Image 1 (cartoon, rainbow, N blue to C red):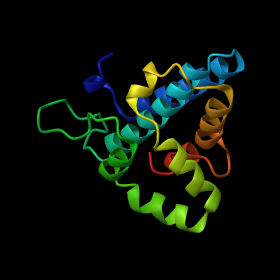
Image 2 (tube, rainbow, N blue to C red):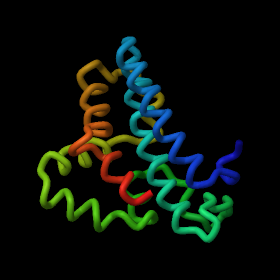
Image 3 (cartoon, rainbow, N blue to C red):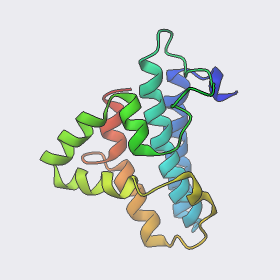
Image 4 (tube, helix red, strand yellow):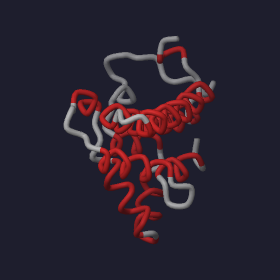
Length: 143
């Protein structure tokens, strides 16, 4: 399925699946891939928020003017309309603030990073998946 054919539900499912994949990879010593997929789960979650803003809850069709086909998590949060909520939560919750700061260091280029160790991968997974202060927990409220 092409991204341009995905809807909000597809992106929500993909976010959850990629997080689960990242957890399996971390448990099996595949730290770089775990780190990358954890960040990708957040990207998919933010794109689900963007899809929610569209009329049919479909992810917008790619064109040269479209700003949703980016991988920068801070910019996606702005396009998704959750940037203010994230900033407010970060202001009131130091643990979430730390998690968001770590997660936003991720980029699509991290898929090539072979230097990610167990500690960094675990920090990333915790920052994304923590049930109380995790980034995905926050985003789920808006998708």
